[in-house]
Image 1 (tube, rainbow, N blue to C red):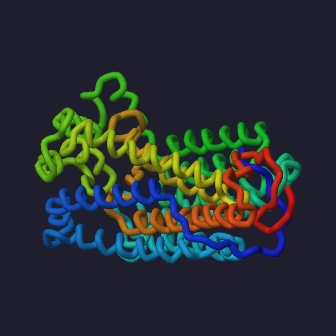
Image 2 (image 1 turned 90 degrees about the vertical axis):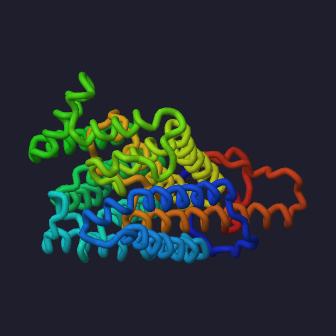
Length: 408
């Protein structure tokens, strides 16, 4: 549980430039792997779209470049400025989700994007929900959160409104992801356990309704349950992903040498790209990729610990938690541990909205890390201390001056 918010005071300039090297190296590694895998799956995927070979890879390079530009900008953009921006951002997201439903550009049996599939407001919605709830929770103490009218009800209004707009696209997995992120943020912000249990019940109810309302949901769950009993009775998609994983064995067939992507593996450049990773690099490469996501969540936790205030802690862990949850869901689907959900693999899968929003989140996390490390350097220079007495965990145990000069 993250420490409760402190009164806002005049800000003190933080000097110093420090970044979390393991975190940045993990991101770079994931981007390199992602570009290699998209290039590997480009030929068949581009031709199926009626485009020349190299089309998807070139677009992915463009999106990665745009995402890196956003990350660099946001790494210098003080995350406290989002306190004034989250409401306009939320309005833009709601408008975008409405536009998706109105324009109804159907692709793969759903309407999730604008501009011929280039922009998916649902991806931006996930990041904005984390930012909005970080600001909202940082301004409330445990007494406020314990009050149903001041805590649970306002939270539900925001989460349900966004989730329902995504649900009707339909994008059931994204809707449930938004609700799950809301629960995670409420827990990190110090939410009441009874209310957290209530939120979990709501998410479960939404999932059951989604399964019963949409035939696709019922079919996916039915195929998942059949696949648990007999893998050969699972859905065609899952059978093909299993085939790819089995072919890869321990060290894989080699980069670019997978053939399942050419023989009917659905969406090998997006939703099923982890199956291509498993076939070409084997269990070794698959576990290496999973290890990079574990490194991300560990460094995100450390960055959240060192953040100058609760707002930074909530943002850092919320954003990195969102990225890793998406990754684990994608991997779980490919290996048959979860019903097919349609989640992309962050930094790996082809897709502009996903890669740009993920890298934008990385920029915000780097800014929080810079401010946390810069503040620590400034404090050490002022006190000439060789040991940082302000050891931080989710609740600070040692008194000291906060980033605004107030004594805790």
